[in-house]
Amino acid sequence: MKALTSFCLIVSLAAVVLGQTQAKDGESRFLKNTHQLIYEGHRSGEAYFSPDGGALIFQSEREPGNPFFQIYILDLETGDSHRVSPGVGKTTCAFFRPGTDQVLFASTHLDPEAKAKQKAEYELRAAGKQHRYSWDYDEYMDIFVANRDGSNLRRLTTTPGYDAEASYSPDGSKIVFCSLRDAYPKEKLSPELQKRLEMEPSYFGEIY
Image 1 (cartoon, rainbow, N blue to C red):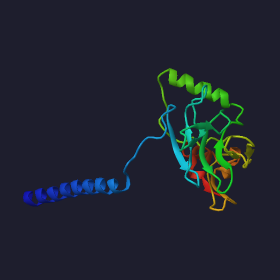
Image 2: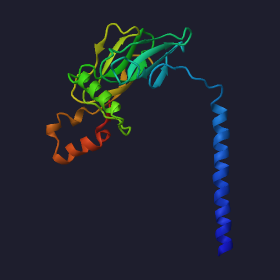
Image 3: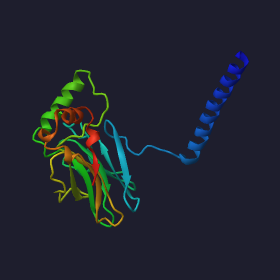
Image 4: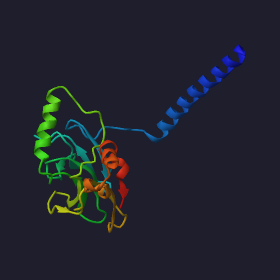
């Protein structure tokens, strides 16, 4: 029995080692010549290429007075970047519209408490505290479209509740996005569902 157990353990360990080796080999076939594109800001991420491959749209924490993500475009030829979003509140999920000079993103800049929330976040960080990462599904998050220079900002969604995570169809005529609108107004929910909205808001997310 001991011999059988030892043999099974050896086989299991060998499988783990082999799997790790294969994973590393597989990864090396796909990720080569990697290099960092963005150095400015506290952190940056969720970047997408423009259809022609000449620019990158991304979110970054770098706006003075705002600890939250704002949307920027990086010119991959010159290395210059500029902000597209209003600079207030939170933003996420930017995307280029094919065949146009437009981009879309989600933003909470219309939240009347946006600046107060920025101040509260700075105070929390100054106290040496930080949130455990979780997406908050902010009910003031709505989808906006603008030109690449940030001009002609226009709101696309107006229903109460979180609207974000949008992408364009290949021809640029439609968007697909996530919305929690069926959970609002919150007062219509049962006490159990109100608690679930507080603890697990993603449960209410639907695709539109």
